[in-house]
Length: 479
Ligand SMILES: [Zn+2]
Image (cartoon, rainbow, N blue to C red; front, top):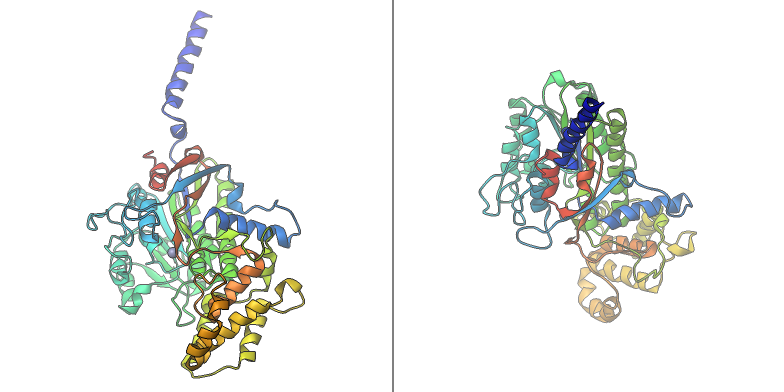
């Protein structure tokens, strides 16, 4: 009996010793890691997308995005080494390496020269397969923070030269901005062992034994080669979930573990444009990708960690704004059929081609694409809307009349909130925001903390409030 008691005491002490090392070390390192970053995604963005789903389902605050079903919620501060308001390269560097740096630096310390090893590389060196996936170009700030080191995030060509030497197994996203400076970039990737393809079937057929894959979206226009906004394409074909699905399929069959960085990169773009329908589509697209990660988790719950966070907030998005007071109508965004970027390009083409549309034609374009003046009384254009449309009609399409006309209606126009509204397309998404009750304070980023959601192995580490530099340390096991 005495011996039995002693055994129990010893066993208990051993267990205490084991767990005493900290709750976070109670399980061994996750084998499968999804690190998901919504670029520009603040808490309001998440709630906005949920409100939309609630509204279209005629429900009341019961619909949750996949990420909001995760058991752990934390918050992370986002300031950079040079500003309370970070840019994506400083934030990406923090999230990838655990170090603060100055805005516009990428993958280097604040001295602008010392390179820092990202956790993607650490995991790769430890034998994990690595995937870098994004809806923007693969040389853009956030994905590049996981493999490159440059003193300016806009050095796309240099970033691509570094990319070709990387041995990660999978890159999936929207091609390369660096191509504008060196059209031979895809050839140099191929020369360095990458299978480089934008052909859907080739991507679908690719196997691990075929080598490292650089899969990108075919470029369809002269716009930046990012994956088109969901609001413009209206399906998930070759969007973020497509690449996530492919990477999961490749890696799940392999014996090794994996580290996957998945960025919803165009949430940020839509928010820079203060485009509500654009933002909503990208939020839902990102959540589709999270659903795929969650499905994987349900197959390997004891070995998987999913962390969802953001690099910063963009746009100062608010639910509710001056025009609607204590109300918001996110369901009205169903009427929006075009992104700010696409509409702006359409209008720009008219000006470039010397096509001078009539005011009526412009009204028709706006009404067709945003549902203004349709059967829903909430979509009726009011006097101020018309005044502003008239103003930007002159401004964009008949500028010789601008000085006189501009002076005449300036007092009326500037009584309204025109932050970031500088052309007809921007006005269209602004009016749409006002109808839906969505507010914006800036065309840039804001400096608030961002949410962190986690599920799986080590999930408990992500509870509470901490700094963004702590997140990669927690994921890698250094914290
Ligand atoms: Zn941004």
